[in-house]
Length: 309
Image (cartoon, rainbow, N blue to C red; front, side, top):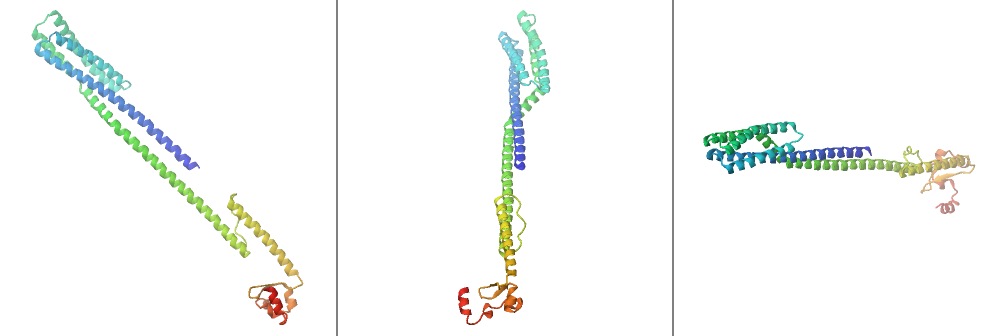
């Protein structure tokens, strides 16, 4: 039927929509996790460089410190590249990342000055300390509030992923449960409707059976081509045959020259043909209801009664 089919199509559409949303949410949560991890790596590496600059600022910066700083700068560059890959396709986030990356350019320029000063020894220890402090300030400035806010936002999105998936699974269960209830309810309604129609047809058959036995006109035909309709058609055909037989019987009875009558179990006359009036010389109104023995000679009655009973 059309109703269950339409319900199934709606269910498929809703489940497809939930599946699509689940896939998008899962992809979004995974991307947020990647961005969050890369930002954490970047912040960690910046913190490491900041600690190196603290040491360099106090100690004047030796060769080991310069090497460690060089490695830290490489790590930061790598972190920015990976972060840009993770945020690909999202202009707003890429803008925040690009701004933070541009802020590190100043740190690179100061680092080059330190490297050049360390090689040429063209400046004294105090001047180197000033460069180290400038480098530390530049690195800390590159860790912008926007970058930190982005990290917190992506972490919250990543954490919300499992919760969103659980909600979608619950929504799927609710939809399936609702459809099952609807399907069962619809099946019950159809069952009750069919049962009512069958009972209605059976009642019509019972009524027609009673009317047929009483010799009265039957109720109209049951429409359809099922078994009950065929049976009802048989009842009507039987009623037509009985009516025709009764008509012929009446015609034969009414035109007969001999007396023809019907009696009950008490041998009372309940019906008689017109010839009875002439033979008994008595009106039908006086014949009906009287015992048959009233019209038979007393000597002949015992033998006739025995023959009748």
